Image (cartoon, rainbow, N blue to C red; front, top):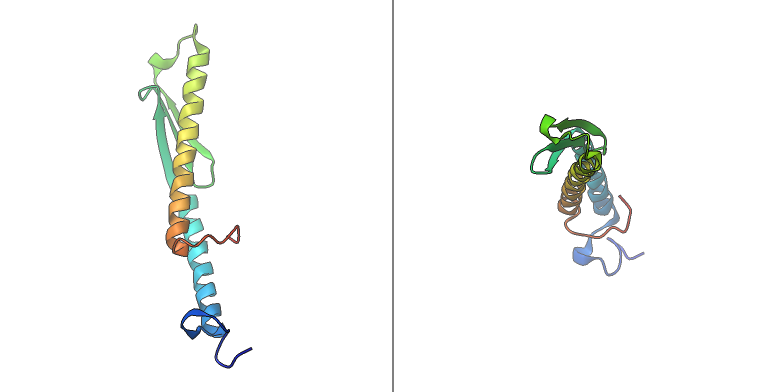
Length: 114
């Protein structure tokens, strides 16, 4: 190995600096994961007839169904609204997670490392 760092490393970054940067990124990632797990995401379907809330761990925390959404003759519609609301809340959680990860890694694609 060349003295002072790796050949071809931008700015002559040495191994110690790379390790510090990796440790900081790992700490930031752990903090971000904890924050994400504590966040909640809410979405509605059917014009607000059904509202679902999930957390960052993809756990359904709450579901609200307005009484007028309950039609015994059309249970399938209610089921569809519940599924749509839950799925949209999950997509919101995933998008927020991806956005935070991109911000943390500076847009680098780490190929599943994190």
